[in-house]
Length: 206
Ligand code: FES
Figure: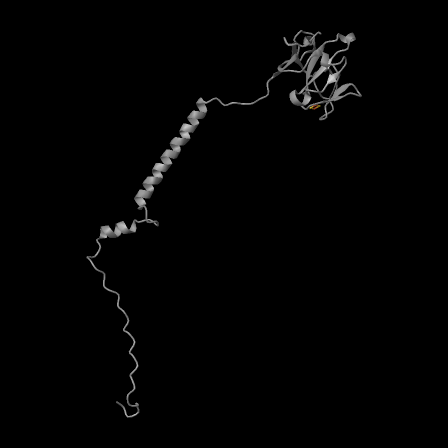
């Protein structure tokens, strides 16, 4: 005890010595074991080899599924919902003499026209497609003519072209009377030549 220290005082505690990490236990790893450790992938579930094997099988089954789908599409018929080419447009009495009816233009792209008694009194259907480049003409009641808005072609009520670039008349559709008394029109059967317009299939006498 030094002469400056008061008698009976306790010396300060000495700090604990730093701990030393214990030396690894067990035998050192072999080179093979180290390689296995290095092939562990980033998640703990698969090794690299397992992952590549699974990926290969996945690609195989995906390709197989695609081939089966293509095969099924080949054997199962594809259904289309095109509107029917033949349809009914009411009874002859629904049309007045001299009338150009636009009732079916939007749905079926036709006009149904009834002649006056002096013209024969029959009915015919004109396909509403310009014979120039295929636009849909309009019926101008005041001028009693069809007029194409695209390049100005004009057609008589009969369908004959008389002005503009259209090279030929509008086409007429097949028309008939069904057993139930209704008019049927088939837009897939059309008559281009005016010589055919008085055929029974092109002109319905009533
Ligand atoms: S498409 Fe009708 S005049 Fe050109």
